[in-house]
Image (tube, rainbow, N blue to C red; front, side, top):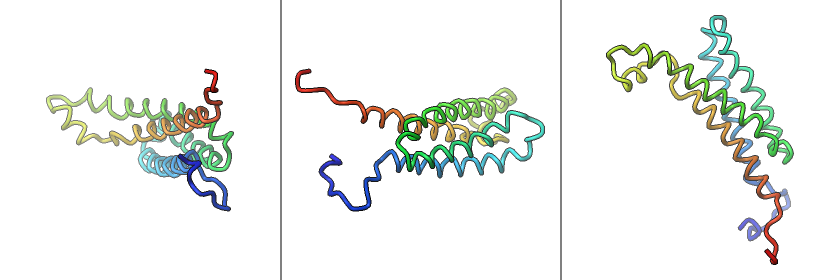
Length: 149
């Protein structure tokens, strides 16, 4: 399909580059959000440093992926780390709320949660996006089946 598109003189800016650029912007915003929300507990909970360390690293790798296919292909490492950190964040953010809800419904306790309920999940989702970039571009590099197969 992309071979049907007319070529311009500025070069090809493929889907992997656009998604890497989106990932960089997403990790930047999520890192700022984590810094704003974690500044109150940074000295009480050492795990609250984790997204603050990973977010700038993920922004850097994503930006490098905009300009380099090699970095996009190797971005799965950061994507996997973001998936793990985001998944752990969902547990750390929501487990105390669920355990301490008392006679309030689960829905009501999550609506009134003191911690952001879905912010870590968006961190994990952006990590999945980096995994998909690596996987998709890796599949594009493989030679297709030959006529004999």
